[in-house]
Image 1 (cartoon, rainbow, N blue to C red):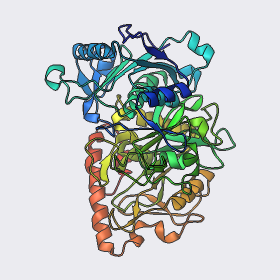
Image 2 (cartoon, helix red, strand yellow; image 1 turned 60 degrees about the vertical axis):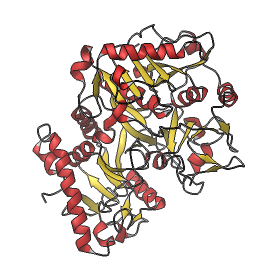
Image 3 (tube, rainbow, N blue to C red; image 1 turned 30 degrees about the vertical axis):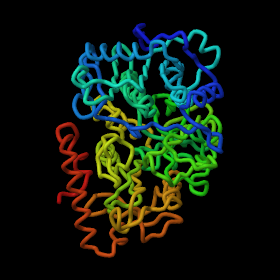
Amino acid sequence: MIGSVDENLPRSETAHVNLTVPELIEKAIARGEGILADSGALVAYTGEHTGRSPKDRFIVAHGESKDRIEWGGFNQPIDPEAFDRLTARAVEHHKDRDLFIVDGYVGADPAYRIKVRVIAEFAWHALFVRELFRRPTAEELEDFEPDFTLISASTLKADPERDGTNSGTFVGLDLERRKVVIIGTKYAGEMKKSIFSAANYLLPTQGVLTMHCSANVGANDDDVALFFGLSGTGKTTLSADEGRSLIGDDEHGWSDNGVFNLEGGCYAKCIDLSPEKEPQIYGAIRFGSILENVVVNEDRAADYQDSTHTENTRAVYPIEFIPGYDDDGKAGHAATVVFLTADAFGVLPPVARLNRESSIYHFLSGFTSKLAGTEVGLGTEPEATFSTCFGAPFLPLSPVVYAEMLAERIERHRSRVFLINTGWTGGPYGVGERIDLPTTRRIVRAAISGELNDVETKRDPIFNLAIPVSCPGVPEEILDPRATWSNEEDYEAKARDLAQRFHKNFDTFSGAVSQPVKDAGPAPV
């Protein structure tokens, strides 16, 4: 057990504790929280917030964590007294309301398991965490004592003047007293990401690298592949691949024992979902699943092309709904590490091979194009961004801590590392085309199988990347992004623009990494 929790928690005479999936669905429908789609999935809408609110997320600044957290950016401090006042408001808000309580685990490896209790005001939120966290057995629930407690008061509003918040929404983590309080948002993803942010603080102290990645495994227990990347880059889609078992789709740990899933379910983007392109995800949407902010027609059929509510439509389902999932949720060490990026500039190659230094450089850079809808305030077009370790909003410690842990594991286990672009080719967003999924799948399979190990590479003069000159089953002309543009001068200008952005972003780490790591980035422009 990692630690105890404050007993000052919401209480109600109508508390529903660890209900079954059918019971939670019945409650959600009876309370008007959602409807059933023709697939059997529960459809729920989150209202004003259809993505995370990073500017409303705070960490309590006290105790040992105050000195260990990398303050600034996404890690905003709040005084313990302010957190306590907001907690008291959430407790009072829950008084005399129906409460839905769910107990679950974070971590498939029992050696690093975190016990979590969620107290929510919506039945569909309880279903969400029941399907996403790992589910204890009936025997384990008998003496369940949580290490971490999350209180979600979705319909309560914070008062910035009185409470010291930035808006009516508040997401607060107290890492010392093992508590999360969420106020003023119905977006269920806040619950998931808050708990995994806590894990990203707690587990590295036990020698576990926590990772925002998906993972799958082949027939051999050490044939593990990791897929890093922000929302919309393809982590969930590419890791759900026929012929390989899914370990998990978003959050993992890498210990001396191997790679293990932190979750018990999947939270997949489903805009433009189709049975042809993503059959495993499409087939997982059935009774027991949740469709979040997905439009359904009069016949209750989901319209995955309709982005009326948001581009950030989601499907939630337990991992066992994916055929061939890994029942243990853990395997050996990673043989292949893939960094996914959705490059809206259209200048990065579909695949590049990375060595140790370039792996550290691109892991710390975390370049991608943030897609519309994944956060409050994003517009309708992708936005070029750098997110350290492909998950900066969820990392309380210094990024260098996670990077050094990853580099050590890559070196020790001789992992192959690739940068794979799932974004645009032939021009930037609005001019070029997005690399099609079958092509990306073929590249990923070649990387994992070892087919790219001995392929000749050529060095990109701007990005300093080792680009394979051939890839089985992939047209050679798309491997060199320069050759896909109709005007080479336009390509050169856009590529140098992006290279300059890499340099400016990496200045943050200039005093924290070695010269060979700095030199592994784009050439000076």
